[in-house]
Amino acid sequence: MSQTLTCISPIDGSVFATRETLSRDDAFAAAARARAAQAAWAARPLQERIDLVMAGVAKVGEMNDEIVPELAHMMGRPVRYGGEFGGFNERASYMAEIAKESLADIEVGEDATFKRYIKRVPHGVVFVVAPWNYPYMTAINTVAPALIAGNTVVLKHATQTLLVGERMAAAFHAAGVPEDVFQNVFLDHDTTSELIARRAFNFVNFTGSVGGGQAMERAAAGTFTGVGTELGGKDPGYVMEDADVDAAVDTLIDGAMFNSGQCCCGIERIYVHESVYDTFLAKAVEIVKGYKLGNPLDGETTIGPMANVRFAKEVRDQIAEALEMGAVAHIDTFAEDDGGAYLTPQILTNVTHEMRVMRDESFGPVVGIMKVSSDEEAIRLMNDSEFGLTASLWTKDVERAQAVGDQIETGTVFMNRADYLDPGLCWTGCKNTGRGGGLSVIGYQNLTRPKSYHLKKVTG
Image (cartoon, rainbow, N blue to C red; front, side):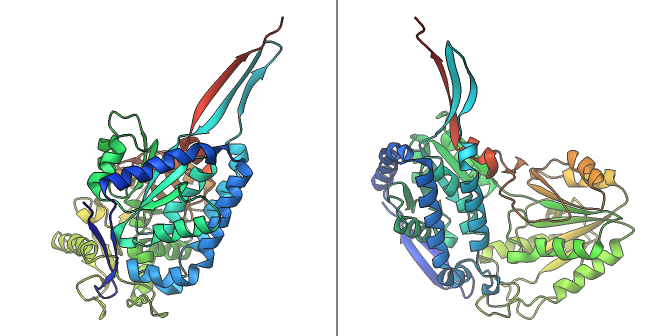
């Protein structure tokens, strides 16, 4: 029996889109079609697969004028920022560029007696469960390399961004990717779990909450199906005494507040050396006070509503609890703050790690700023988290950044930048952020399996 998935627009609380989930039988049939189509897709020349994927990416770009306001309606990002096609195209293009080298056979040795090598072969059917906060860019991280590597892909997108998977599938089909090779599906949680448990897929890539990742792993338990996860973060920034404070403030506050703070690798806590703390704080407050909260369809809006009222409530609750425990709020409530999805961006000081706002994922426009006196103190505080996605270090000293970075429990170390995904680097995390890795050559390694060839020649 199907269920209705409903996307509620954060702009005004209206229903923006609905879709019916597939029945159990139809869901298994879709997975079976993907499996049946995989061998023929993998048999196509690699360059042909690359060309078809990049043609699909270009078709998505042709839809951008429609996609940008659609995203504003679905998850609240202001139209002034122009959507996600730049990063979407950058990531797919890089993975296309490195595909031949990344997927090439590993030659172990050949002589008169033996030929030995290792191939990278596709898993088969890759199931991609994508989140709503950067719905195109997070999906393409896996969709593009999975297809290029010869897998077929079944995409399930978040209800909050209900139309994204449909657009991607339509674009790729229009470019010539067969319909059974790349499918968008609407599924309920029970059917999703049963598909995984019944080995309908050969690899699962999930981006979302810790609870969601745990559900994926539980469903896959005992099946030996690979599961890659990126589950959340509480990413820190550390501003050292020799930092370019202006650049640090601009980048870290943007990293905390852009997309209403709804970024996987957004900055959620900042540690500032005591010698530059007052200057940093004053500049940060000035920036945030200059934001314009409002309807994301308005070109003047710089910060839109959070994607859902319940997400905003969690942020408000964290702020309120912190204030009760002695934190200080530096931003007066904006006139546009409606107590619902439209939320005043906030900077908190006098915070401690006893407060949820410095410990739990906020995923909203709030950041706590703490004063520190040494690298050792900053490292201890940065590591005092159940998450480990990225950390942003601000200093003029590369060797110092490397030394500090070596001691941080994280997936990526940034120096003098933040909140960016370089497709040449592995996108990965540790602790409750999950395991696995996307993009880069390692992304291809995770979307394929090694197959060894030990061939003895007949010599006589």
